[in-house]
Length: 202
Image (cartoon, helix red, strand yellow):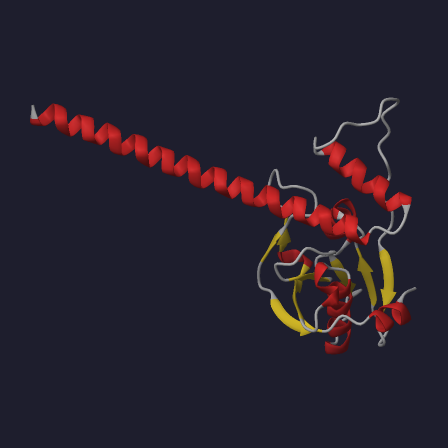
């Protein structure tokens, strides 16, 4: 009957619609997973010491990607971030890996500090510490240069770096280490400069 046919078509439509929604969700989850693993790959490429590798290994174990070594489980203390100073006296902190990025952005930084990160490029979280002062254009530009250097874009001529106040940076519930969302950002295009980075390191 027409009524039965209508019900059959409606059920088929609902089934297809639900499948489409599920597929969309699965794609979104997979994209986030890839973004996270991409950031870990970038960390590995910048690791310089055995301690750097140990921290990345611990992060992957915590997230369930690799097995922990047998023995007593110890919570490793996250190291302090890299420290720099701008030419006009502002302190800049740079995370070495995703765990440090979380510690730096979500716990250590204050709401009115400036947060910087390369735009759509894996890299470090960078904090320009304001201590209640208004950040200068020079300080922001130099901090952006540090963000560009400590990213996959370090070999590029021009790297887009987003910056906003820490108060506008949030970590979604269930997000992987180092993964955040942010609003009210501005963008600077800067050239990574190894000599400048070396000269500003504390």
